[in-house]
Image (cartoon, rainbow, N blue to C red; front, side, top):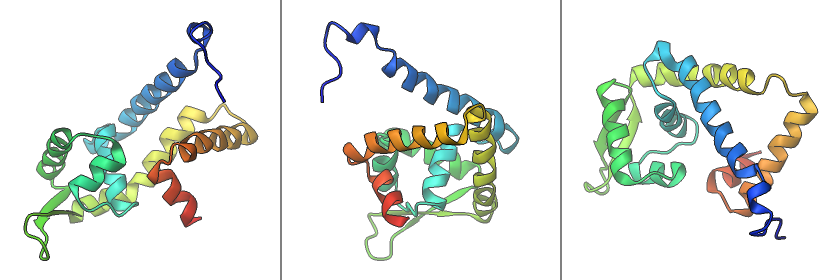
Length: 157
């Protein structure tokens, strides 16, 4: 269904609202991550490794829609912080595997707590029903776009 035309596109705030909401989420998350010296993008990588089982740079690139150069720099920083290690696959020496270090595992145990605090700060003014509706609507959009992370989460429920 086409909701937008060239005539009404300029009067819609939807694109701007979605983008600004993502920026707000990252700012709030950054504030909660400051004590751990981890950025919001690094948080996302750690979540993908710890909670979604991502174990290669290529998989992370697909999941987070990042190019390989950006991912390499991100993994370099996480490795410098001793949160991850890169190892060569025994089956294919060309392939790099990612594993959390002991420090990375300790931090990954805190990620749900940090994320929950940040999300509560962001959406705490919404009623329970409003939050459920928002999640349902965003899920519908991502399912229609065949987003692999969203589809995997639905399949796991």
